[in-house]
Amino acid sequence: MRNRFSFSFLIAGLTGIFALVNGCQKDYVAPVTPQSRSFVEEFDTVANLYKKGWVFNNNSRPQGAATWQQGIYQAVSGKTGITFDGFPAFSHKSSPDEYIFAGFLATGATVGGTISSWMITPEMEMRNGDKVSFYTRTIAQTPFKDRLEVRFNPTDNTADVGFDSTSRGKFTTLLGTVNAGFTSTGYPATWTQYEVTIAGLPNTVLKRRVACRDYVSDAGSGATAHGNAIGIDKFEFNAQ
Image 1 (cartoon, rainbow, N blue to C red):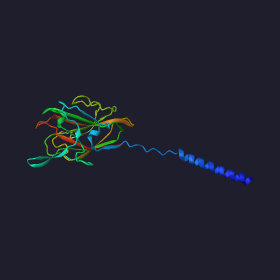
Image 2 (cartoon, helix red, strand yellow):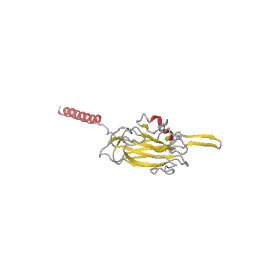
Image 3 (tube, rainbow, N blue to C red):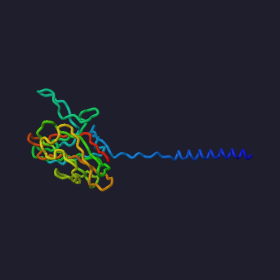
Image 4 (spheres, rainbow, N blue to C red):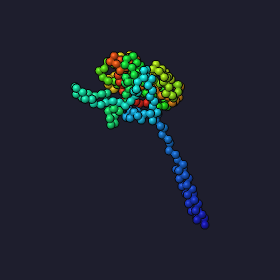
């Protein structure tokens, strides 16, 4: 009887250990991988940006019909042969027009207008030291002046840019300017990368927005007016 009891006790003990180990396995929860705050926008389909939380606001005066739109690169037949309207994307998957584009038709003026056309990112969780980079260019060999500001709303997560061509709303922090000197040769005519750094926030992660502002004075469709066309491609937010 003693031997049978010992054997039964051994079986019961092993069963208990197995149940304990098996129970531990069922209770195990794999660690959650933190979601990256970084992202890349290639502008393959500009119409989809609204669904992603991007905001576009044309504060140009007088206001024209155009705002930020799909890039342009198409063949045009003329008396001198085939030429191309626009320029190809910096990078693309299926079509060379896969970039975002802004131009002088943002204002309805012939001369003397002001282009103030805003492209505003979705809310992003950001902190000081995070990086924003993008590629930009204009059309080569033209005398027209273009300028792009990169601005930051340090106050909240809204897309408030005010209501007229000179207003900045809550985007009061200027992170950088392409062609700050506003010259006819200061905007690159080939795809060139620019990078800015987020600064001015408290020492924590907050939801904020960054904006690209096509900002041109004395603009219009006339031969002597400024503002031609600018493209942006491969916009990246790099969390540090």
